[in-house]
Image (cartoon, rainbow, N blue to C red; front, side):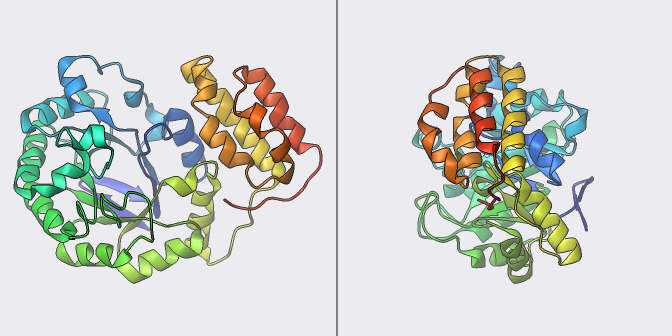
Length: 327
């Protein structure tokens, strides 16, 4: 299967969602190795890019092995977003994505993130300014709406008219954040409202859920975020299942330990110590959660700053094969 976004082919079914503090280069590499068809970076500030303070940001740290890659940017002013897009374009990503879904107060109070959904006319101006500024396809990631009153389809039509090349829909409102069940009907309605590719997001926990989302909503691609944390295998499981119909087994304890150690080494190589260790703690907790024996070392694992000691702790879990379960 292949979906074209602008002039960029995405071969496969899955995209790694942007997640602040998670989708850095080390995690993107693991997910791409496991079959993710594309990945999106952590969001970077358009204002920071325009002013020069974010021009060397680690959020723009990717290389040729990561293509196709999308850089997500947040902001609210058309001219600033256009300048941010120009700076991003210098790094030659395949796509530039506008964050229209972040529910965090410090972002929405700047009229960015999910706040952009409150004013589709203004959002159209932002998109047009970016489309005119760069030749790279512009996409956006939205929610079902600001609150319980859904307006995702209205926003999607406005975005398409303004020149957006694709739209990802997290099927929860800003007020719901990550609670409750995602309403996939929202994705269906957006798919019916526009002709550009639509990417579904929300509650895709396994391969069967991915199949159901694609079939029930008609979306073109599936985006996975939280359920990939500590579980990069979800991409190979989905891709293989959708291609062959054959379920893929869950990772063993050895798989979990070796992947966690590789992730640790990549993170430390990129960020140094102790940052490369402590920023990985959420992922380390997720890697080890399904391993019964991890309970006894988790507190130390979550406080240790020496990567060599962390590796020793992880290897102690692999003294016997206890089987694995997907997260």
